[in-house]
Length: 388
Image (tube, rainbow, N blue to C red; front, side):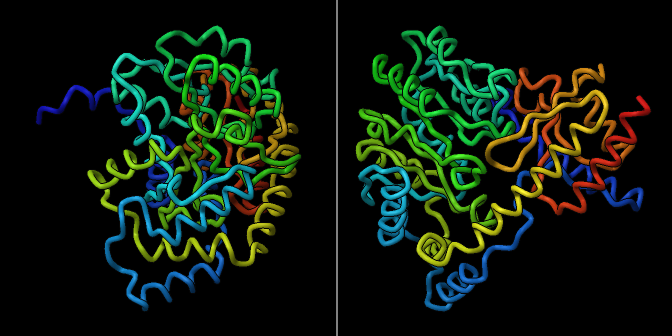
């Protein structure tokens, strides 16, 4: 077949590839792989949310909805975002999508021309760079450095901005490092965005999985709500990855264009998952709090274990559920090491380069697994590394 040239510019998400490879290895060798690669909470969706979805199906919420989402659900999301980000949001600012990824794709399609520049974090979620390249824009990475707690350097950001810069992408808490931008960082980014008339795509999908301090959204800063697109959803916070419920919060001028793109692509988000969103956001939050507390305990197990392995060091992440250990002393490329750990130790992790070129020398380890399995995985890693 002859494919469109643009397909050569489209990247992927390595976590799913490694998961598939690990599953194949389990079947072929009849071994138990320790899965520390996938960014998915290992908890079940809270029962009250499941019951709300079942009830919605029984009530006939099995049909099309408006492309932007059901009005009553958008209103609930607007109330939640108004409260948590300390901004005034209405349903007209909200577009509901099947998962969070459309809020990366669709605003770029609506706002970015070929040749425009988009600054994004590197290492960072790989879909940012993939979409920038796919639409024919210029991807401009800003390196996140360990010595800066994996926060972007705002002075470097200033140097990367040109007259063609159209958008800056930020992600806090951050995947893959667990780093968090400070209020001062956000203030400087806001100053740059306002002075240069740049949009900010703020990926806040991990906003409730924070272990130190509290979440701050750049949208809450003066002059930023109108030029910020907030990406959020239920996948991580409520262990609802398979439900595919995400949403974007943006200015009222942009929202109809995103809804039109939804009409032309996915039509709408499943109606019963939308109704379940009301229960998720307004119902009891005990399960979320318990999950975050458990992640915090696993974080201590993970970081302590990694720092006990020769030639590996790891900073303590402040949010999300990922560790980003430095493995440079081992002297292997990150991809080669990750492959070796899967093949020889039966531990699935991701190479830092799965998140961009500046991830070389690091691995990403997800502690969205039981403490028992994490300990087993780290013991296997230690045994394997000591033989290198």
